[in-house]
Image (tube, rainbow, N blue to C red; front, side, top):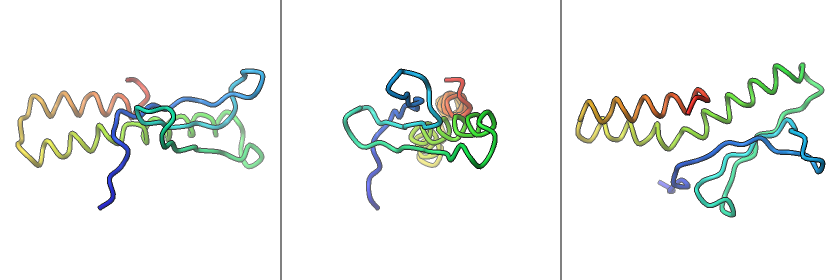
Length: 99
């Protein structure tokens, strides 16, 4: 299996040349010059507000993937419940855009 970019990953909204936010999110690993994922939307297909909310939620979920994977691996490896619960709470908060 190919290795994924190690976490933590961060999601941030792109900006245009004037510094205003645009409907594009990028997810980066710890190295901002390294690999990244860009999520774009077509602003002509739906209302911008709904698209932006969905896009932000999708970006947060994708950025939380390394932490979610780590929590699952920890559970499968040794079942240390206090540690796993803390990892899962942090990963879920990040996936929901709260962390």
